[in-house]
Image (cartoon, rainbow, N blue to C red; front, side, top):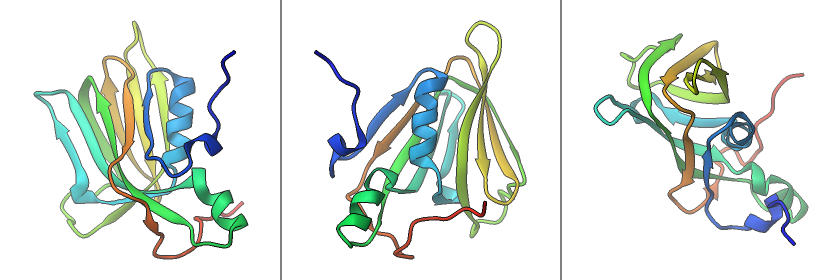
Length: 159
């Protein structure tokens, strides 16, 4: 008998997820929500058709356990990598300001014809990064050990 994975099953192990459809992407988006990153940590490699960001991801999968055990919430560095990228566009992002820190709010997919589409990374402050992709393939992988979130609080969004 097989069962779906649960957050609790992950424990302290690093995440390593791949999204190849909209349902998978919703999980990656939820886990990457409120990740912060310096603008300098985005990279597009046109020859490899790959776009990647080194994120400081809030560990949503551990937030309830941390609260219950009265320990600080955590962040972890993760790589968000998108394959088969044909074109990258941005709005509200000043690539010239090397000191800016961006905050990722969500990742969505707008399907096109024959598996193509547009992946949209929505940023706080009305910014967005749009990736034209040949196929949907997004990977999220933790690459460091978790560390105590500098704010010691979970991100909050006004209702």
